[in-house]
Image (cartoon, rainbow over all chains, first blue to last red; front, side):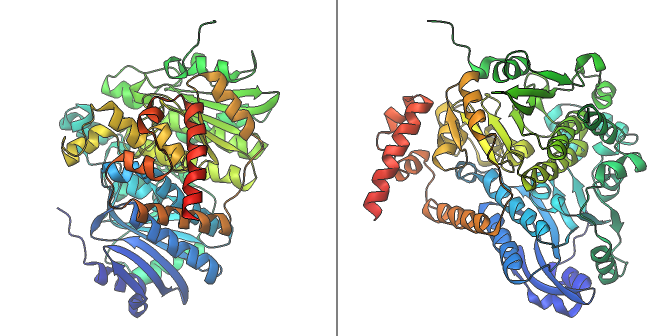
Length: 242
Length: 300
């Protein structure tokens, strides 16, 4: 098992003393801190918590507060969540809509000039990553983070393909591998950070250099982990240009 | 009476043909292009020449649209790298050319056999959907198949301007089998079709305001619903975001102690559960409208 840092220690590494402005309640992070000499809004999850309807709403409420009262303040999203908890009542009450609402609020922020930066700090798995973290302008991950759709063992259990086969294939297909580095090869992560890095400097640089264009397919092709997506997309765009 | 074709029984290409103006559909990257998944080939799993999704241009009531339709029988309509890239490309084209885009969803989400590649494709498509909305280009998800819209595709549908559902459609993140495994058969018996559909089916989603239209299980009704929505679209703004926040908070508070979908139905104005369960989609819509008026009066 990979070690995950206690949330407070990690927040201090990312935001220094200003991390005290970030509240943690039921493993959901919300608050304001400082990065790169300016104010940033922080939303996120920690302790690998499951994200549910209530958690999505609290994150969304904080994004709305930021858009309304902290004009153009960059938003930093921290991700350490194992996914959505499979729960019938959550589904009955429309979990997909709660996630869609959170994404809509982030879109509102982007259109209002807020830079969106994600740092995957722990687990960044499946739906938990899709419902906010993957929606950033630029996405970063700690090398210790567990990033991806699911571990090979879980993939094997569902697809009935032996773990050994998947592991062997993952050597040439990073998409099947689980982790920050293979995810970066697909273009899903801009850069992998090490805990030894000066994370405050890294974050400040990330905010300063961010751009809202989605560069993931191009990055995936360049890095060789996702060779087809960009070309297929471009063919559709060419066909529809006539 | 002429034979009624059920939407949920049609194939993806039949659905597209029936929804679009007669003869107007032109497929982009059709099967002769042989775009097949190298992942599946390596795993020794049969591939499909369209990678499980049909995309193209058409007209509906003479208005230009782009349509995508997922092919459920091919690995559950799951999103792999090529499948996802076709969908992303179509929504990007829609934004660029300002042509409304409709996606007929029939998918359990990301294709596990291709790992994270499909996951990223869904995230990219979401960005393209919101680019459409920012340009006031309508984005419409149709959910009317037994497979429904689950996982990343369920979340993606919630990013579109509108969701058109039939009572056969199901919308969610985690599917019933996964939940049963997690919570036990006591909490969720995935073979209990009535409970599954009341949890995630079109009627409940329409009642909760998560689907904007609930229509008959046939392509003509779906087409009519789409036609009404093609000219409406809007970027997210602060007022709508705040209103939705309030609505979702209220919903959570109101039903936090409820496990029974019948309680949700009753609380939202369905007085006769039995009758509403058996009602056709349009009848249900009428019952809800009548019930909502009553609920509103009592509260006031």
